[in-house]
Image (cartoon, rainbow, N blue to C red):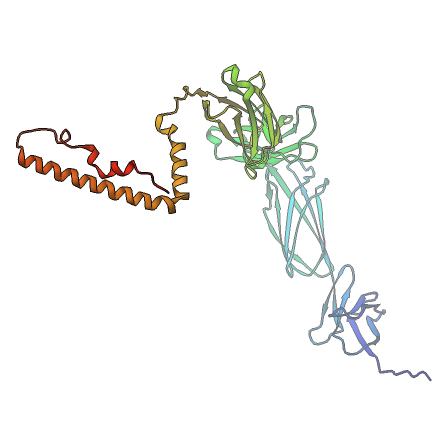
Length: 447
């Protein structure tokens, strides 16, 4: 047998007052664990939604275009409906012509705020306004409006009509920024700098996708310099033609102030030459290194028979590189310095001049006598160290014989000086054959 268990469902019953039909009522779980359920109110403004599963935290909201529905603070399913109002604004100039692109700021009610531009017919409509007081202010750089601002009292379900007049007090400069081939340059900043007595004025604008620009707010009877803005805003532009234009504002706009912009190259070219004797050119190579890998050259350019070299283009990304001249000359025959220079990839072209001036070393002198004896002396020392056990007793015996000979000779000299005070050479009366060292030399000795 299959058994079913059931429990009593939860129903949400509410109403909208004053009675209002076709209000969309939505019941949803605050934890998003249950799918939302919607229903419409009847002609009496009543609604009933269910059955719903128990154990969830349900929320109820009501919506209808053209109305504000406020939930009762004590009841979760009771709403108060208020019909929204509207405000129609129209702006004209001093000759009763519609004034477009005027910024209208409307704020008030319960945290309501809206900023919109008037249409080509000079009108703007603010819909779905709750009853209350609103502050309206028109703004346009070249116009002064009457009234400057005003307070509006908006009642429930009503339409408020407002008319505003603008008076021209400043003028504009129109133009286009293109490249040399006539293509538009979007996103370029153009500025107007006041000159002489109007040096305190400065206005700017940004070109649109078609390259057109409009600088607003130029004061009458003032002289301005129109040019591309200098600084980080136009990093991709290297120069412009003409560099600037001078305009004097009267009581009309300036049209056709066009500028040709030359883009900054995104690559850096490097060339150079080496000043040296022609005989050294075949031994030279120019190498390019990057800062983050100084041990491995990115490019090598052998000179051969010409002193000019050209390196491949580098990405203009502000990286640091090293260009070095390297020679295959031997350090044993020449003295020289391998010149190098550090460059930063932030310009479109760089030319480098190196000087390579090697000096030939003088003919080396013949080896001195002491240097010639170094090798035999080294060999003798090595042999003596190797046979030190056999040579040590012999050395000690020879040292003792030498000391005995010196002592005997000194004693003989002293005796002769006592017997014959006159000066004579003691070596003449000394018989070398009496030396025990010499006598023992004649005897064969086993080692």
